[in-house]
Length: 293
Ligand SMILES: [Fe+2]
Image 1 (tube, rainbow, N blue to C red):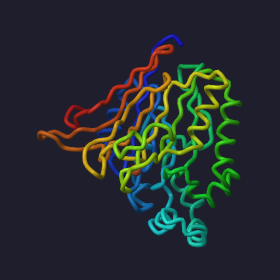
Image 2: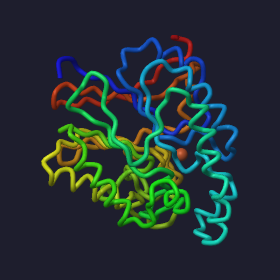
Image 3: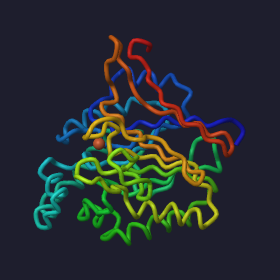
Image 4: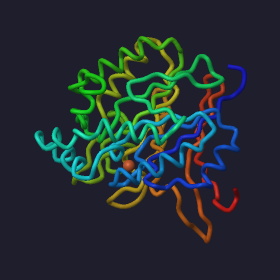
């Protein structure tokens, strides 16, 4: 790697993406933009509107669909409740909605069980995890994952991701997922801790944890793991840890929601700057002001 690689990490969007962001990213020095997904809140058409806007991005960009992308509100409820028949029935329209969503995104690449080169860094790849993850090591959207990838269980999901690691020639890896891995804490304010049930708990996903451990056992260098889903604002109050380093891996929860917010009369647009210079990784929160553009 000759020059440092600059990557922007944009957490769960939830409709917060506008012309200022387009202008900023198009004029920036970023080599790549990584989105953790969740463009919509509860309506598919909200996600399509954001996707159309994101299609104006000129910097290479990669996104993983979150649990608010291409699901309808009743389907999301059926997935949360794990109602077996209803979730299967409500998933029928999802392939069509996913195609619509992909088309609306234009040049923005949609990842899932996939590996992607990093422009300008031939020894670094981004590995994209399981789509539509909702945490708790449950295989959500199983009907869609089965249709799209032939994945029916968490064990199959982990095996597919480990296979992807084996097939990736690059030595250095960045993982992009919608929800983070297990093993990083069980407090409500832990980076992927459960803040909506009394007593907390680890709300990460075990297939991602297994894959990271496998990559390390294979001698790969895992530079960073980037995800969202568990929003930084904790339901019981305060903010969760959004960045930690464990065994040399940078874990980043980019989901500051809303990512556009007002403070002291100014509008701030949140994202995170990940800088990779050989093996050194720097992570910096960026609060760009809407009136700076
Ligand atoms: Fe979200």
